[in-house]
Amino acid sequence: MRHKFEYTVYDSKRIIGKEFERIATDPLWPFTISMSEENVYLQTKACDGKPLLKRPEEISAALLHHIKTLSEQYQSKILDEVVITIPSEFSKKQKEATKTAAEMAGWKTIHFIPEPVAAAFAYFMEIEIPNQSNILICDCGGGTVDICIAKVINDRINVLAFNGDSYLGGRDFDKVLYNHFNAILKHKYGINVKDSNRKYILNQQCQDIKHNLSTAFEDS
Image (cartoon, rainbow, N blue to C red; front, top):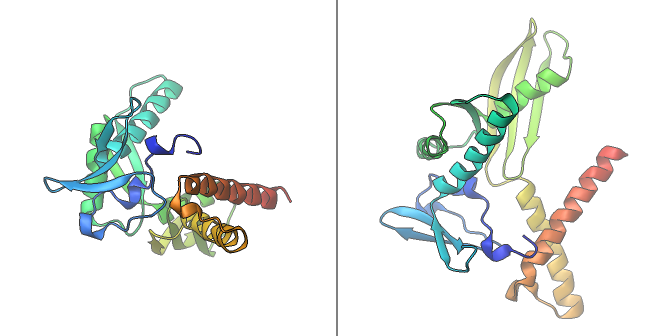
């Protein structure tokens, strides 16, 4: 996004299935949100520079179709059944919109599992946990933070409770760094990147800082 921000869309999971009035817009989005015939659209630019309107379902469908293609290439067979992880806070409309996106991508049989539950199963597969253990798992993703409380009984994981916040995640950590460095640039050097396209460059650099710090912590 550092150089092609005007062609970029993201955060569709924070938009899909929501009414226009309930979408929390982000000033760092290089795209705009509009409403037409009771449908929400993301407006960006096509490769030829012309305006391009896409529904959130179309954005998610493109990603799900790409995943489907790669999975079929890896397994050398046609796949039509999928399990999709979704934020625990997803409403019925958001689930329906995600199902529509999956159908547009070519999936026939679609299952949903809450992200914190999926994180619990993934952790259980990687880590040997003593029987009768109570575990608390925190899954911090790019857009959400999910918590799952579970109990291990006879090598089976029993989910007791789960919840999450769809507006707390890696993207929000980026924003904290962005605001911090923008304040320094503004007060120390008289530069306000919010008034220009340089804000996208600064935001990308903040993401790089976050990733580097995360990697350094893992390697230490």
